[in-house]
Image (cartoon, rainbow, N blue to C red):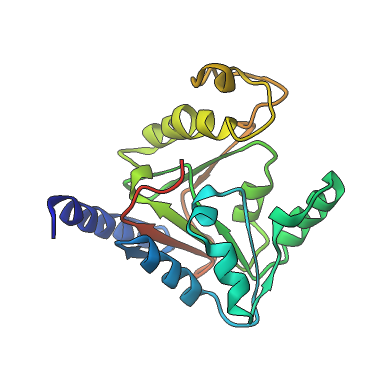
Amino acid sequence: MTPQETRNQLLAERLIKNLKRRNIEAHYCPTAPEAVDKVMELIADGSSVTWGGTMTVRDLGIPQALKDRGTLEVLDRDTVQSPEEKQQMYLRAFSADVFLSSANAISENGVIVNIDGNGNRIAAISWGPKKVIFVIGLNKVCQDVDAAIARARSTASPINAQRFDINTPCKADGTCHNCTSPDSICSYIHLLRNSRNTGRHVVVLVGENLGY
């Protein structure tokens, strides 16, 4: 293995151990294709599946892989058009068998950090779907919780802001201003520090730079 691969393996082993302490199942996949295979393995035939606002899941091509499998009920939030349809899809996510997400950051001791504008993603992470599968690139690992929150706010959010038709200071200059703009995509900060129900939260760590 290269020095980078060795470091990634060691870091992943530490994260898996710390996530297990928090009642969170975790797996490490060195490459993106292996991560896609692992996600598909974790989803049983006949399951209903949807996802939150995650570029990682989209960039890996997981939505199409789910559809191509042919044995799943795929609730594709990316196909809805109107605000009313979007609201209904958000509500349907709570009754899904599997909800896919990524994370804006994760601390080395296993706390998963997400920031949300509408709150639907972190609401589903907290309650509703039978299983939540996170796909997280090791580029999102931070030394501690404070650093993870800082990454979510100062790195992930200003990048994500560029994807939307919004008017926020971070979209204008790429820097977090701790704003209270009506368009803020940082309305809710969520820390998953422990999984109450065994088997509900699963993390797939990936030894590549994924998402924002």
